[in-house]
Length: 166
Image (tube, rainbow, N blue to C red):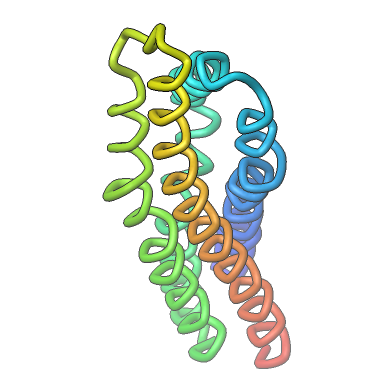
């Protein structure tokens, strides 16, 4: 059981770190890069990115962390590592609150509203649409980046605590 708990713990850390990197990259390069081009181009590009990102690799890295973190916590607690297990469970809760919830409540609805099938032909209208989208989307993506980074950090601490307890 120790081997299984160890594998699940490491996989949970890797999945959480992977999605954390995605959110961090969006906050620091993708959306700022799109802000630097014409709004019509930004809308077209972001819509394309949002469609393409819905793939098995991303979806696994996005929905996998809370499941893997929770499972790691349970398995570690079964192994007698109560403190480490509870920290993994806390990381799952932080990830769910800081990543899943904002995505479902803010980012995906914004993406859907942006992807209306038509891009405003008036540059001023396109600019207003992009600016409204980009500012709110970035703010909440920063929350997702921070939430996932906090979950990664907590999972790392959980591994250390479990190792010290064992």
